[in-house]
Amino acid sequence: MKKIDESNQISEAVDTIVGEVISDEKPNDGKQQTGLKKRDTYAFGSFITKSNDLIQRTKYSLPRNEQKILFMLLSKIDQRHDLDASKYYTISFDDFAKLTGVNAMDSGYANYLRKTIESLENRMFWVPLGNDQYKTMSWVNRGSIVDMKKKTISMRFNPDIWKDIAQLTSNYTSYSIEYLLMMQSTYSMRVYEIILSYDNGNNRDYSYNNGLIFEPVTEEVLQKFPNKRDALKGFKYKRFDIEEFKGMLSMPTRDEINRSKSKSKDSSAAKFSRDKPLTEKYKVFSDFEKNVLVMVKKEINEMTDLWFDYEPVRRRGVRKYEFLYIFIKYKNREEMKNVRAFHQEHKGADTEIGRKPRKRRSTVNKETLEQYNQPLAESILTTTYRLARNELEAKAQYQTYEEKLTPDERNIFIDVFTYAAKILTNTKKKDQAEETFEALNRIIKDNDGLKTWALGMSVKYKAMLEKAQERKSAQYYRTVVYNDIIENSATIISDGKRRAAMLDGDRSNLFKVDWAAMFED
Image (cartoon, rainbow, N blue to C red; front, side, top):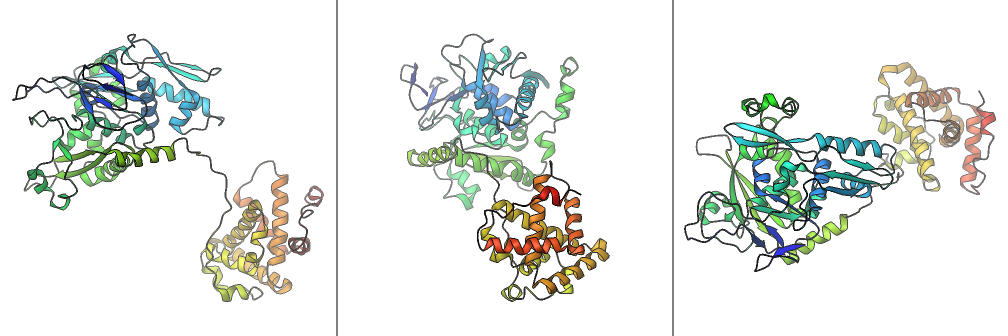
């Protein structure tokens, strides 16, 4: 981690460097703009450094995973020693997997990796040249190297942007990469760096106001937002034009691209003009707030060294919001402990989750559970399949042996009950539903409920799954269940009785049956 000491030499420490936004106006008090400043924060992790021009004047939007890979590459640059714009920067497959959330053991991992790198190579952003002209530039050069043996990815930056990302001594912003890699919204990452590029850091007062940088909240500002008067004390603010702010988070509009005289010389312009800018995508502020700002506020407040808030403003007599006041305040040492704890808790979290048994809340009352040997009511034909499934479970006394089953066995029972319930409640096939209803009531009458039938069906269903080389369609298994209900096979009931006895005793030989012979047909 780096900071600037009193002699403006780079040294190792825990503070962050943020370059000052250079104004066209000179400060009235004659103070010299150093272009360097120190933020009194408690940042951690590696750092990204960009010129403020690159942050503020470019228009682009990168997919989240590509944005994170770009950040990782930028953090590899040594601001003091890297002089070669053609230098390759390398990240490991493991880093790539963590950044993208893709399991490196998945069969499609290598293909996804190559496509992502190729996409980042082809990704352009727009730089305004003045006079309604925009120039397209790429982030990285063609010629990236994926080494499957060493499991590394090597990429090099476009030399045209080298002056904006390396050997920077003024008018730049540097911030912790750790804050950004955990973010889910690419807009959160972009807004965070935009904010910092317009800020002079903590405890730095140049004694002039020019609207270019964040300034302390004044009484005049507090009067605009009486509901947040107390909450905003100690914050700094900057007013952005809402449409311009949206433009910083996306590609230029089609009109802006068409006005650019360089468009005809750039074959990529047509491709990127298809990307819908936020000014068109979210024309109403409420949509922009819901889809962008809400997540930005949550992630910046939760994951970074800033407190972030915002308020839209409209002119008196005008309905549309025109300006966006953004408020920021740096967190103190105690507040940063919570940020560190959050990152530590979520860092390297295992994203693989094993299958859990499906459990549902029963909606069957106690009286129904006690009447397991009573016939099904005809009203079951017009209820939902979920309620019908609960009714079948009650008739099968499923709750009395559920805990004795393995998770896979419980899933099998749920499947059997679900297929039977969907047959019963299928209004498009009323004849089939009524036939199933009558057959189930015969089974209940002859076998004191559905317990032995359900247990026997689970035995058959398990055997089918073990024998099958691949899982078949739900319609296939539903047909199997329907046929066995109608036929009321004596074999199924017999297996169910034997299964019930096993559940109350030794289960070790439960499924030792010659299934291959039984289901040869």
